[in-house]
Each structure stands twice: as structure tokens, then as C-alpha cells.
Image 1 (tube, rainbow, N blue to C red):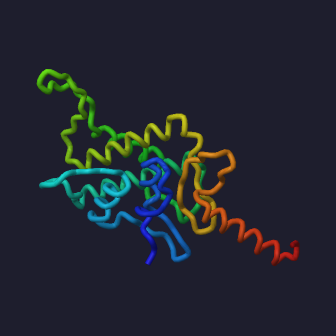
Image 2: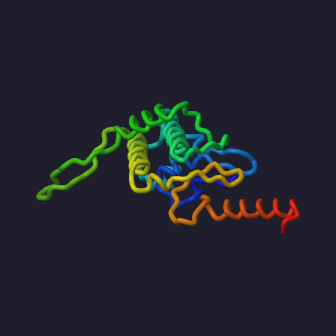
Image 3: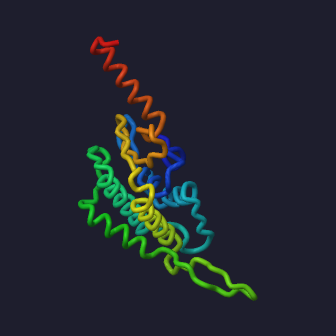
Length: 201
């Protein structure tokens, strides 16, 4: 059984990229980590550090799972646009970049906002949200994605073109060409094999 990307895929990447990478691939095909509401809660808790607390309304609903997948797919569509990614296996079901941008903006509009609150003799700044906790978490991810796609790291977003890979990453070093060492090793092994086959050792 494939290992879940929630536990191992590119833990050093920004959260919006990690959400994109809940779609991943290996030699067996393309996999999706967000197939159930339970899987979404696990990803939000284990990867995003989301702590919804307990009580009613804290577990993702089927509608929130659909929203999370739609946000993920919109992010992947925009990432493909930014990186000129033509990988067929990485293709997002979102039809257009404009639709993806509108979806990301709509989700980000529900994020928590700062408010001034009085606590006894102190004034404090706290985030206030009126949406259910899961939707607030997704809205925060959408807002982070906007920052990523328009901020200093925007030009560093890359698609990994190693065989069987559909992941994205932020190029953190000038010599980094692949999402991971494993992908780099696969590319080098494939090149070596081609050289041997062509008789040019």
C-alpha cells in the first residue's frame, strides 16, 4: 500500500504546496490523500498543525472535504500555470486558471481577521472567525497560497519533472532541480541506464 504523503511528502515545503502535494504518484499510479473527511482531519492536524478542539462542528463534513479538494485542485491549476507544467498525470480537473483564481479568492475571503478585544485590564489582538473551524483553516491556507503565489517566493515555485512525479516544490537552493533526493536519484539512474543502452559509457 502506498505511504501517505501526509506523513512523508516534502515536509519542508510551505503548507499550500503540501496541500497541492496531497496528490502524488509512484510507479503504481496517481494517489489522492484526501479521499475521506477523516483523512482531511488527519492532514489538517498532522501536517497543518490545525487544532479544532472538541465538540460539535470540529470534524470535517463531506461538504468541507469537497471544499478542501476544490482548493487543492485550484492551487494545482494555478501552480501548473505559474510553472508551465504540462505533465498529463499532474493535470488538475479545474478547467481554467481564472476559475482556479476565483475559487482561491472565495475561500480566502472566509479567513479569520484581527480584532481588538479587552481582557480585564489588557487590550489584546485576537483572530476572530465566524466560519466553522475547518473552513477557517482552509481559508487560512488559501490566504497563505495567495502570499506564496505573489510574494518573494513566487518565482521559485517548480514542478518536479522526475519520472512518475506529480509534485510541486519551492526551489530553495540554486542547484535544486527536483522535489526530493529520491526523484533526483531516479533521474540520474535513468540517464545512466540510457548511456549504457546507447553504448556511451
